[in-house]
Length: 118
Image 1 (cartoon, helix red, strand yellow):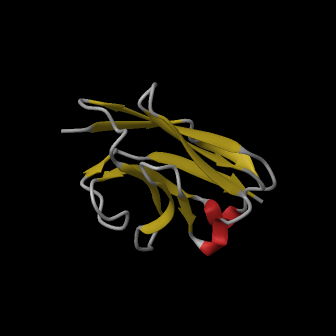
Image 2: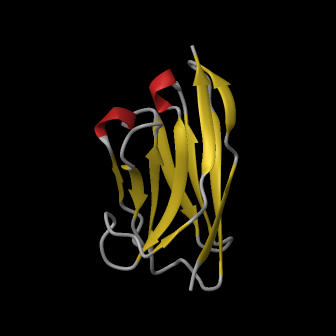
Image 3: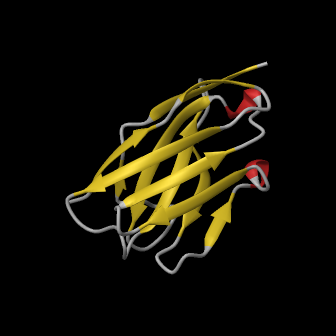
């Protein structure tokens, strides 16, 4: 089992930055792909970014060039640096761990709220 706890959410102004962290426990995340998803009010949960065990990354188009996902296996932690935030980035952000497919995680965190004001 992998337990995931997100932190770093909050209120930011449009154009600002936030850094989300996801601390894992229970086992090492080094062999897992680590994801960030988000869910805005009234919308489906959507994929945001992933970093695979080998370090390659993927992003949804709407965040490319603004968000950066990274991992520190020694700290068992994953990060999402969010720059040039937009009001449409407002959502609950979830960290997830996937053994096989980045789009089908096996473990989820509880989420952290990000609100971007215009």
